[in-house]
Image 1 (cartoon, rainbow, N blue to C red):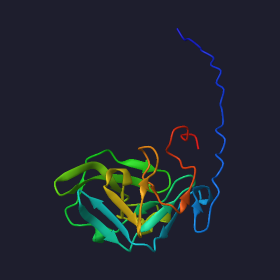
Image 2 (cartoon, helix red, strand yellow; image 1 turned 90 degrees about the vertical axis):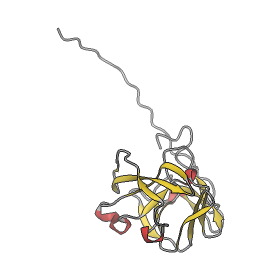
Image 3 (tube, rainbow, N blue to C red; image 1 turned 120 degrees about the horizontal axis):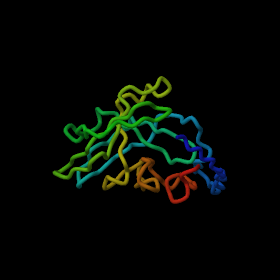
Image 4 (cartoon, rainbow, N blue to C red; image 1 turned 180 degrees about the horizontal axis):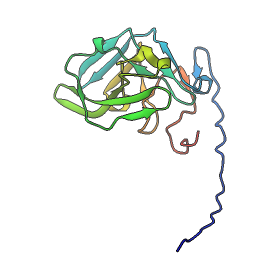
Length: 179
């Protein structure tokens, strides 16, 4: 016996949020492209966990994507040896960058599970990021972009870093899933 059910679905489009006004030296996440763009970073990036500087680099890249603050990818040569440990977490897939693997981050005896990730074999458009590592700002004690302490992108899923030169609204907070 086959049962047929007819469902009526009403789809509702989420309106694009109104970008906040930008001031001198600021960037709007709504001016970032889709698909994302990767570009070199001129500032020094520094990360502290458990009171230990675990990375300091002037060789970072940032990924810019519509509605997201930048995500910073750091060269492995500038990460303190022994800080990254494969987490065993299931890989994830980004439609633009490819397959990501995850790391537990350990410093001074403190371990943050799945706190960093990398794309060992990114898609051709992101080849320059191969093996560079991104860290969740929310799981580190301090993440610095130049002389400014960054704050995490809203929500727990995305890995963007927010600084005073970035304006939104930004994806990740309540009600932003459909952006």
